[in-house]
Image 1 (tube, rainbow, N blue to C red):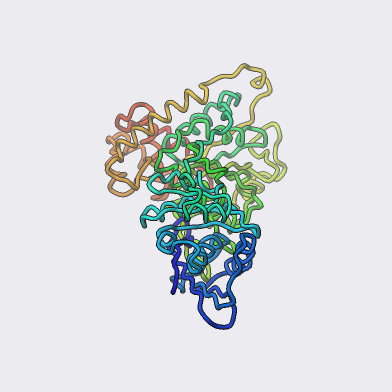
Image 2: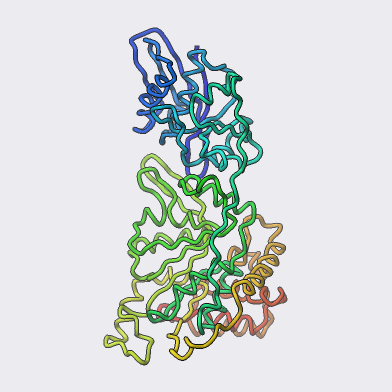
Length: 504
């Protein structure tokens, strides 16, 4: 007779149910696992055998067959150890078959029977809740899985503890959600001396989730400004926190089951590969673009990134989704992030500094910034020149608003957008609006329309650039209280677009 247990196979951030069928039959003694297992799954038989031996359970001299159904779906990862062990214990009549069949399990087994935490407990708990099953997992994965709330989570330290739980000898209390993690005190925007225009652009970008590019000489404060962006962004909503945490769970980045309400801030080095940024690799894991979902992806020294890596960002920036295609996997990861980048104007960095004239101007700047293609440059809503700060300004006391004051205005603007797009679940900020919805929220009077048409004609704006200016103007109006877009809002939005040779 065949005993069943259940687990999941991860396809992107989705966890698909997998039935683990265990049969112990008469025949040549063997332990076979079928159903497209990878190397880690195939090796589960040795870990399961050792764990059972440590419990004093010897496998019978019979043929043991484990089938992972559906058999045509690739199975990857060490989390299949626990469901295979439970199914085998049920097949040997050590555990009640009906009780095991009513559970969904994942976890890696040590040779002594200790359960090792594995990535993906949160999406696995979502699937267990959808199928009305109890989730069985290692103790270290319990706090993470318990965040789902609608699913009972039993988190055990060892396989022996699970046997005692199922047989009623020592029941395990359901796991409770982990603590909300709190990041260190964010850096304050008042630490940046001068650069009031760049600070204003940072506030607008945060309010509407607009993509932002800083261009300036070395030491002018570009990275310093970007590092203070998390301090002015509103916290994640519960829905956004769940979306983001599921991606981080699959990537194994949730520490001790803690879920954060702070927006992700990912800043990969410019030597990062395409798979590291977009996602992929042997197991098609999420990349930095997806790990920045609902947060910020900061690319410092933008022209130093490989051209092929930068070009792959063009589609995710527009669609909010990245497709990772491999021979055995076609996975979709969400990546609705705010792209913030910093770049020097030329290779030496001093093209725009009158005090340090670049000896190769203007060709040096054209060659260096030319590494950023026109289509990618066109996707930045705001392009800001960050000039060098005078030494006398560095001795002045902090000026301007603090991060807390700016964050209050940003939160108010985001609240306006939440109410505006309440009937459009896929649209959360002005940067997401398009088509007829964008036309409705950016109606212009005749004076403002004439200004925009003259600018579009003068600078050869693309249709994408035209619409991005409208979105930025809408955000500027929201920061002032959500009135209609006026000529001053549109003029400010045009001024933040740092017209370059690629646009002329």
